[in-house]
Image (cartoon, rainbow, N blue to C red):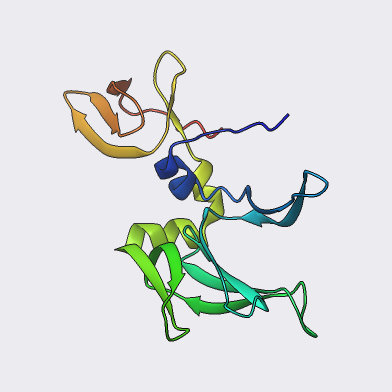
Length: 167
């Protein structure tokens, strides 16, 4: 049985999750093989015309990579480009050139998260113990800390000063 798990792509990006895989399906045996794992939001793949390699993008890591399928480098992965923003798909044109879509440019906040992975798992908890993921706004008003997030449909309040809970 094939299990498909869907998560919000925004959370995958911010949390730096690297559970993506590149799979190969073998039609005669009807089996699936893991070719690469530990990928950070793989989001585009393109086979070269002679099938000697394929290119794939990793959105979270802003990179374009090459997986060799034939020749002396078979099975090895090379970094082709470290790109200026979140990569999306990669496609080949009629001249054998590759085009990579870039969704948006890097920001200072993304740079901090990319270079400090431990920060990606920090959560604030409200007074009921509900984890506040992806805090987008914090403001002190009348002795309380108000916390807004894009991940929940409510605002948390904490007495000020408060203790940070790290899960």
